[in-house]
Length: 437
Ligand code: UDX
Image 1 (cartoon, rainbow, N blue to C red):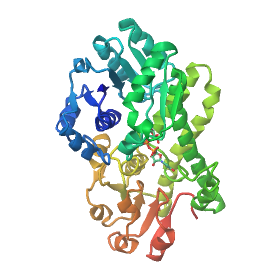
Image 2 (image 1 turned 60 degrees about the vertical axis):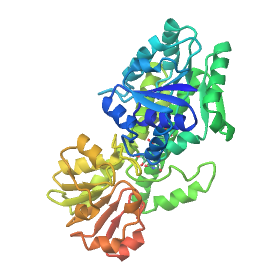
Image 3 (image 1 turned 120 degrees about the vertical axis):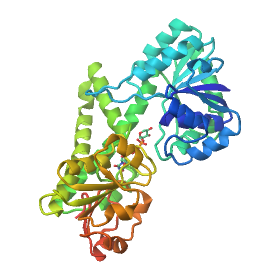
């Protein structure tokens, strides 16, 4: 099928290259020439496992091209909208300007029978509004809402082999026709037996934010338990293992630590609260305010522990921060808890030295005041305190005895509860986890 993908950042770059892999003929469009140049040259514009290989592979097929020319979408039968919906400056609500601009740019090229597929995460009600706008310009085109659930770090895998596919369709023959078109787009994952949920626009929009709210709630739940474990002298990791054996609860997303960040969970729960308020249902989501508060409180707690282990003050103390990305296997630093903690310690007068395998360049752009070191050894050299804040594999597998030779004082705060406390203590370290005795 001829498909266009509008917006070629995280979501669009992965979606476009995966659609090409599925055998479609894909045109990616973005207003950012840097992004288009990189993708056109077959280079991944950000670090995402598997994306570079996929782009290199698809570059040779002639089925994947990128352009800044909005008119290049003409002739495609299906148009995926993959632009960002960031948090509005100074507000909880989502900024929909990119979605609106993408639809406006698409309208002149829409032909009868075309299907527009919304993938961006939007406040409930947006699809109905956009469908009306599309109908004004091209009454024979149909909008489908088809949220994505990809996780950074696994984005390619999640897109090629999703755990479910959701179509939000309008009623009647137009919806039925659009369903057949999407079934063809997703023929390969559907043939693998991927569950398909067919529903209406508002349900499809809500599925995405409900899923992310549940995940955020699960993380904040276990972080609240960590707070209790801290005062009761209990171990939240053993607690999580034990409750996780109940398959109604499950062990996934019960890792206590410095909490969630990234381009999705924090802004999605805030936008969801804002939208609920507009709809007069704000009470239904007041618990999400607590989820957000618990999450942010973990960052304060790490700073507090740092101050404690350094005898009351971080001023002029050298602190090595391992990890800047919001999670491992990503160079994304949007709302990164690790960088936020590093910045807070810096503001309080510590000499903070940050390292990360892939995220330094992005971190330097958002937090230019911090000191960055490419090598782990240089970052920990002479440190009074080591903070593990993003659980990259190379940090989790560090040899505590070797690391002890580089630092000034062997004190570690394990912000992700991924180190073995006994091994670190045996190697002479003062070990502090979050919610662990
Ligand atoms: C999330 C959703 O998982 C995905 O389905 C959706 O499409 C986009 O948002 P992502 O932002 O890539 O994906 O990250 P995710 O793996 O969900 O992690 C989010 C944050 O939670 C990270 O900062 C991570 O470190 C943190 N986290 C995760 C925890 O603190 N504890 C856990 O147990 C799991």
